[in-house]
Image 1 (cartoon, helix red, strand yellow):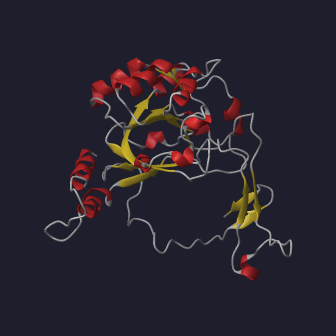
Image 2 (cartoon, helix red, strand yellow; image 1 turned 180 degrees about the vertical axis):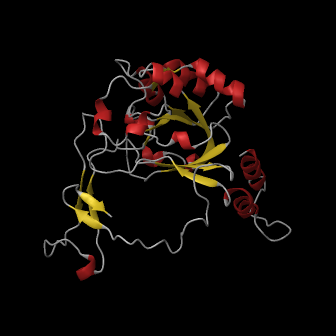
Image 3 (cartoon, helix red, strand yellow; image 1 turned 135 degrees about the vertical axis):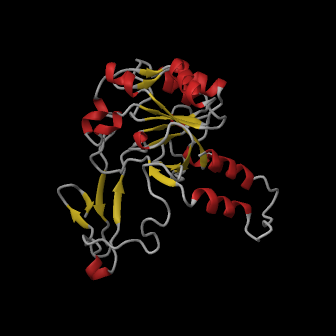
Amino acid sequence: MAVISATLVMGCSSSGPEASPKGVPPLWRTYERALKGAKYVDLTHTITPSIPVWAGFERSTFAPVVNPKTGVPYQWARDGFEATRFVLATDQLGTQLDPPAHWNPDYPAIDELPPTFAVRPLVVISIVDQVVKDPGYSLAVDDIHRWEAAHGQIPEGAVVFVRSDWSKNWPDPALSHRRPFPGVSLPALKFLHEQRHILFHGHEPLDTDATPTFEAEAWLLQNGYTQAEGVAHLDQVPEAGALVTIGFPKLKGGLGGYARYIAICPPDWKYGVSPGEIPESPLARSSRPLRWDPTRGMRVR
């Protein structure tokens, strides 16, 4: 992935949109040379009405949109389209991006985060072995040092995801109240932000730590830092050398974000899919059409 990172830097080195000698703009060349052949891995849980959520929040519900004139749901056969009504009980749901306003109104909400969050180097630090021995283990500074001894210093501005494999039991609703759970210690977070100057960290559980005062989460959000929660599939990305793209809806004043994280991995990586390997435009037609399942409260195939 060093090739991808280097190419991105070269592509951005131009002071303007000037073309290369062959007439191809530098960033387009970056895509063709480095990103088009890369492997893309989704690090995001699918949101459904039954996924784990903190006990202090109500459950969310999905329903077909009803025509207000008739009181009847729209139907493909009759109306040519259907739509869904999402009643989301919280903006702290599923895979998230927590803005600092979640805990401190003096800092930005989700719609106030800068567009520079879009693409970053991705670091994955595994604590899987420690969690097998101690389900409540928290990332420590020593774990960060061990990662750096193997891969080099964490890049400034990187996103650091902590792999614990906690999410392998998703979407079991019991996860929301299972104790203990793997966390991230306050000293580790301070080291990552104050010594390595990362953009933000992410973890698989729905909370940063299990201390009585949530000391790590409190320090982060009360001091202007963001974090990712409920991240998935970290076993499918390399510990070093990938990029991560970060997307989230721009909800005015939102205190949490329904986020989507996509890892961009080297072309020879064993997981993921590359552009052109699957139908994209048009997308593939399914042999099983979507249908409303009233017992599950959502559309399924």
